[in-house]
Length: 452
Image (tube, rainbow, N blue to C red; front, side, top):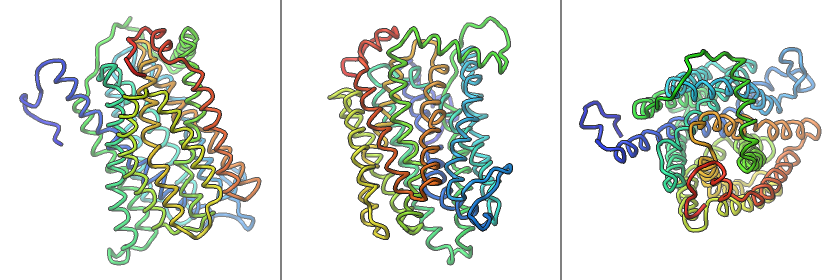
């Protein structure tokens, strides 16, 4: 779809302009999801682990900054470190965006820092595990910052009754691009000899191409989204003021305890979701002894089914409401991860079954959580509240990878690490079930949809 260059590409009227922005907004999911899929979910975990093992001492440890780290835990720890960096930056970015109304320039900067770091993964080879960890930390943190700004557009470009549909379509666009690029990755990886490159070079090309894709398709939303003017007192915002603004946002959330209750529930269950996404390939390669081709195929299956899952759960939300649909997905997540503990090694068919189950619930649970939260945000505070939301989404999702990494470091078993994630979905279910969402929407000063 073209971004348009002539005035006729800009339809008149608020409804037409809103639809145009929505179509542009979908494309940031389309741009960035390739990073989440090809880099985080498929290639970087196993590849960085291999690079770290090449640099490890006789006992299997590497020593970044003099700290002994088991090579198999490096990827999980780097994900956690990226979250800490994002938490430092996002309060300032969110406060600046709301005070100036200039979300789009900040989205551009964070997007291209992330895309650049991802493209730089082409140089990850030999024993350069530290380079890989640094690039992962920068790219993941930039992703978190950009997604907080991207999500903050949702209340501005979609009416309340549209948000479940618009959010679900965004996720569907993302999973479509993820599946498309994984097909290309699979062709390159499995046929690397015919392309004249070795296996490691093929992986590095797949990693770097995700950064190129991210940067190229980010141009579409940056062309179509527009900033809204806000009243400002003209004072400059420092990093310290950004943190004070975060404290002010959290204090403001105390005036909306039901919004805070939803955010807490989301923090818990989404921590489990993000950990499954980032660690599934490591679990498959290291514990189940599956080939890289099997992992690529399974993640591609997740992407394809997630498109239908996101759209299908969006339709279910129109009938049963977003809250009930999310609760149903958490039951499915709990059962799926429990079954994953018992998967036999060396049998890819069962891993494909597990991937199919994950795909059907993945996109919908994330899309509906985003749209449900958008109803709980007071008007004019979208970027600040979505910065807090992103801390829950990626920013505060450090506990799951940390628990996963510690469980492996202490037990040496990835099965023990994966089963520990069940508690995130179970606790999240209980907390979400206790949130009266209709009352929460009204308390935030927003119109209550017929079904929510």
